[in-house]
Amino acid sequence: DAGITQSPRHKVTETGTPVTLRCHQTENHRYMYWYRQDPGHGLRLIHYSYGVKDTDKGEVSDGYSVSRSKTEDFLLTLESATSSQTSVYFCAIRETGRGNEQFFGPGTRLTVL
Amino acid sequence: GENVEQHPSTLSVQEGDSAVIKCTYSDSASNYFPWYKQELGKRPQLIIDIRSNVGEKKDQRIAVTLNKTAKHFSLHITETQPEDSAVYFCAASQGSGNTGKLIFGQGTTLQVKP
Image (cartoon, rainbow over the protein chains, first blue to last red):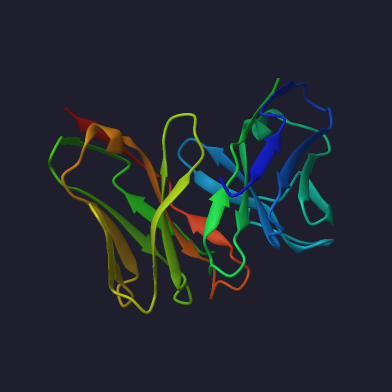
């Protein structure tokens, strides 16, 4: 499983509250990604990181921010959660030295009421 | 923007038959094309991938073909088994792939009937 964990695994929150999801990896991979998965849309990239303090936007970044203060942790924050952000969130890593292969964490199911 | 279209959205086959899932992509600079399998409630798992300098790749019962000119690639599963039932996603690298960014298709739900 490429040493990837996500926390929490499930969360229910209310509209307007801030939410932070954590992705943790143990194998010192440089690249990390946050995706959301919704029925009919596959997986869509929210933000990604190519090193400590180096991040960039993906295709659905509005309403989300990220931070990476150390190699092993990549945080996704919803500053003010909305019902449209109800989704399953997956973190992924790109294994260094193996080309472009990405491996996913177990996912976080977020429900915004 | 860049786009990956995947067909069909659902596919039902009898055990032992073959299954084919097709994807088209729009970014001519894409050079990496992975396929993921996702079982219900689980994470997507990489099952096979192909790079643009190769036309076909096989791994036991699964194979992927790539037609760069037509910008489409396909997943072929032979001798399907009930445990092949899952959602399958194709993806294409955004640009030449330096960032590792992937654009995913919408997914195909494969049902293999015993």
